[in-house]
Length: 103
Image (cartoon, rainbow, N blue to C red; front, side):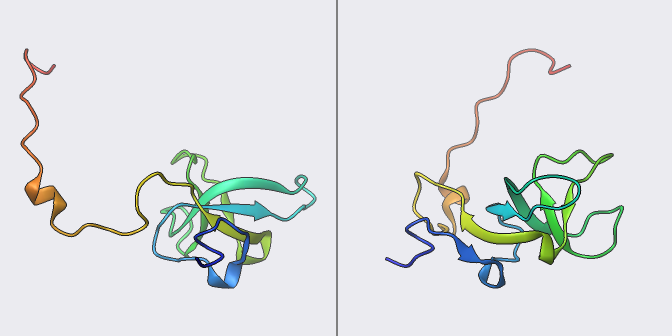
């Protein structure tokens, strides 16, 4: 089992930059103490460059972290296997139709 799979903190240089949500340790700054946050690598519309974005950000108030602001990362805990299942969506049953007008 790798250290990523076992849930150990990893250096940010090894963090996935594919949009996947991860847990990070933020460094203490003049804005606040060190903390833990859930982020993803993304390009906010209001910024124009890729950075670490808190996943609970609002479109009007995006919380962004530059590389130097995050120290370590680990994957989010999951009860499902850590791999994707191609073609699964095609094998799922159609969802039931909702009753009413849907308004």
